[in-house]
Amino acid sequence: METNLNTQTNPTVTPNKIHIATLMQDSGVGFGTSGARGRVIDMTDQVCYAYTAAFLQHLEAQGQLKTGDQIGIAGDLRDSTPRIMNAVATAITNKGCKPVNCGTIPSPAVACYGLEQQIPTIMVTGSHIPDDRNGIKFNTASGEILKQDEEGIRQQTVEIPAGLFSQDGHFLKAISHLPAPNPEADQHYRQRFLDFFPADCLTNLKIGLYEHSGVGRDILADLLSALGANVIRLGRSEQFIPVDTEAIREEDIKLAQEW
Image 1 (tube, rainbow, N blue to C red):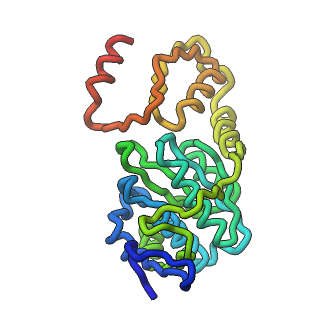
Image 2 (image 1 turned 90 degrees about the horizontal axis):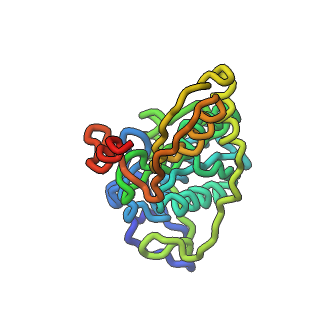
């Protein structure tokens, strides 16, 4: 029996089934330029779980996933990201696979780790859009999903275990399926740059760094220093700041003038 997001889960009945195309329409969370994106309020635990389950089913149907396989997960610095990462990890665990928590690292870092390890990876990020929105990027073991993969995911019907979610789509029990962070993906990503660029190639250079809310800010500062630069830390934001690449904020223009 196919249900929509408004159907209450009853622990005494069989699992609910959700068709992803219907979920997209009901929740407003759909595929954008890169992965699934939507308002945080709409990206409930159940919606994120269902998207992840559909991705895994699609991989399985393509012969790219089997029980016991590892799947990397990473996220950005948005307030909603840890919750969504846990929903993703729960779907992976319930599929019989093993989530690998790669921590808070950039999208290319977790994708690169997946390519190196030949495993699928999932990145929870809304990129540059406002903090009240977020997204999930899916990567196969050979790279980011393509349009035909999106269509394959859209056609999936997934089972939602009875008693797992409340009527509003939140987990009924606060249980984390996200393991402790594994630093391997972060370390591999940093080492790629250190191996490529000549040692001390930035010696005698003074570089100003505004550490805004991009998830790669610490990696960037460390790499610049490791390559010999004198890094001047100009500022650091403790709150997520969206970036409009076509309209720089007045606050940032003022900061640049002061620097």
